[in-house]
Every structure is written in structure tokens, then in C-alpha cells.
Image (cartoon, rainbow, N blue to C red; front, side, top):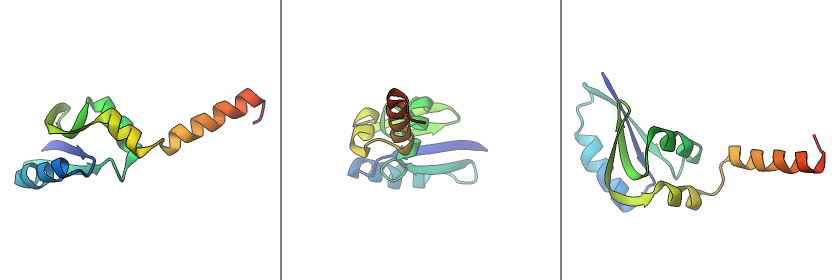
Amino acid sequence: MKRATFYHAGCAVCRAAENELVRAMDRSQVSVEIVHLGKQKDRIDEAVKAGVESVPALVIDGNVFHINFGASINNVRLAMGPSEKDQEEVVAGMRAGWGIR
């Protein structure tokens, strides 16, 4: 079975792509995971590592398909603000700089 991940940010372009494309996929042939980066911002780095440059995007067995154009992944990252991991790294860096453990 093929594995697919559909990344989107919740915009109108993304929702339309989800409704038309993902819903049309044969679920007996493809296992589809839908990732709303607006609600799961901790998965933005995962999307970038997979090769996603803009959303909506569909990754099927490691191959990235950019669908239309809703937003660049950098704009999604900026709009979502820092992830918990980013915040922890900033705090750790500040503590290290101040000599606090």
C-alpha cells in the first residue's frame, strides 16, 4: 500500500485541494494522512524535510507534489510563530549565555 501525507495550512486553496484530490484517492490503494500545519505547527519541520516548499502539497512515498499555491512553507512558519521546540532552544540558549542551568 502506498503512503501519502497531505500538508496544508487551512486556507481556501488548501481546503479545496483536500476536498477534491485527497477525497478522490482510492483508500484501498493509498493510506492518506492529512496534516493541518496551522493546527500541528510542530510538523512544519517534518514537511520541510520531506521537500515541501509550499502548501497544499501531497507527499506520496517520498515524492512531493505541490498543488496550486496557497502559501510558501516559510510564510506558514512565520504565521504560526515559533514551535515549542524553537521556544525551548531559545530559552536554553539564553540560559547558557547567562550561565543558568
